[in-house]
Every structure is written in structure tokens, then in C-alpha cells.
Image 1 (tube, rainbow, N blue to C red):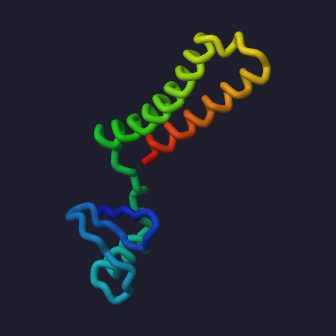
Image 2 (image 1 turned 45 degrees about the horizontal axis):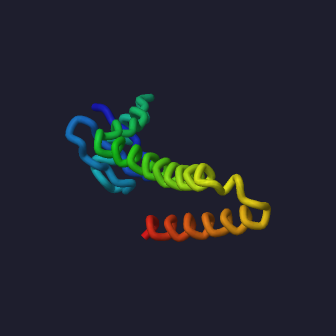
Length: 113
């Protein structure tokens, strides 16, 4: 007979039939498990199931969305710089940068909705 400890619980999994054995000293399966352990046997370590393709894609989408949001902001700044913000006087440049930051912040809030 083979058993496996489950993470974050006292429940034991019997691998032969995938039966969950509760932590109840009166439970027939628990008594059998404890006798098996008393013979020096050790349960198998828990191995997390492999990540599915859908789960991998979902994680990738989150990262790509963050990259896209940052890219859009960077591109807007670049376009405005190329359009002449660099050539503005100090006060005009500060005003233009402030306006750009305000517009970017609004766009970020809209994307977050």
C-alpha cells in the first residue's frame, strides 16, 4: 500500500484508490495507515500538478498587459518629445511634461477599469 501526505492538511491520500483518509484515530483507514507507518514506511512527498497551458498563458497575458501599458506610456512620451517638447523653453517644457503626465495618468486609470 502507498500513501501520500497532502500539503497544508492532516489528510492522507491512499494512492491505490485516491481515497482521502481523515485525521480521525477511530477511522479504519487511518488505523491501517498508522500501522503501516509503525512498520517504518514513509508516505510519498506531495508533488504539485504541472501547470496547464491555460494557466501558463494566463500568467503570460498578465505580464504582457503590464508591458503593453508601460510601452504605450513610453511611446507617448517619445512622440511628444520628437514633436518638439525638447525645443521648448524650461517653463513650457515643464508645462508640457505635466500635461503629458496628467494624460498618461488618465489613460492608466481608464485601462485599469
